[in-house]
Image 1 (tube, rainbow, N blue to C red):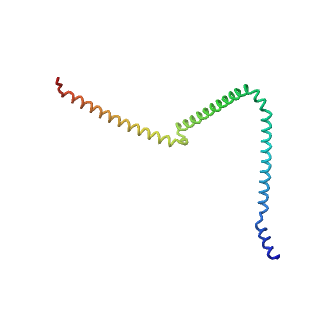
Image 2 (cartoon, helix red, strand yellow):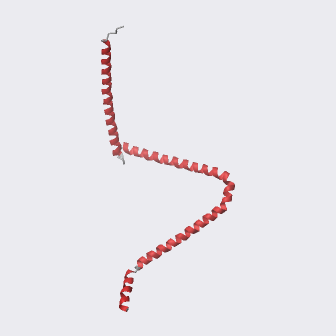
Image 3 (spheres, rainbow, N blue to C red):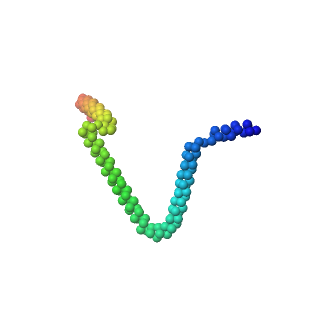
Length: 153
């Protein structure tokens, strides 16, 4: 019977996790449990703070709500203004680099688009000139045809 139980314990020993895996697991479990405890503690503190602060917030809401809205709008305005300023400086520095020939990123696409637009403009100018000549020719034909008509009255 001892011979049969030996391979089973040997198999269990072979399948047992290594000490490195155990240290990893214990570290992860300890950190996870600590963070779970801290999140529960934070939730409890938040709920208690809200319970205690609700009467104060209700009493001061006619003052706090408009003040919060004003602060929010001011903050959004400053952030938007700063963002527009950063975008303008970025665009100006890109244009400066493009004009001075430093070949900034996207210059190839801009040159390609400019070339395509110029080609289209040339094509449209040619079409307009041809159409203008066509209309002028038709108008001359119409006026010459009306000169030869005899009005019977």
